[in-house]
Length: 146
Image (cartoon, rainbow, N blue to C red):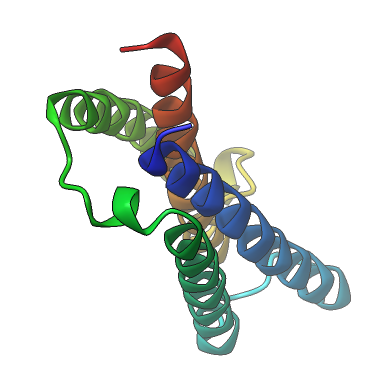
């Protein structure tokens, strides 16, 4: 398994763990409030710090296991895979953002539950999902051999 594929696995796990903790905290707070929780700098900061810790820890472990691969520069295949996976990221992000903005434009007065708080929380989750999709695409492309 190539080093960059291992890195993608580490990032998927880190994003899934940190993202799940964030979503659970927001859901817990939302249930207590009776509506979608407003943005909280504490929760966002905890997500960012947790993600950074998990990513650095995972990257350090795989770099210690195969230091030669970790120091190797990206070759043509790696760059092609990163570019193709980046397009997947862009599509997922664009679809999510446009969907949320469309729901926001409809507004609560037209039957949409999306207000500013829901828009913020939704956009953050869409960014998490797009990042996971990008790393999943990288893994897929490495496994396919492209």
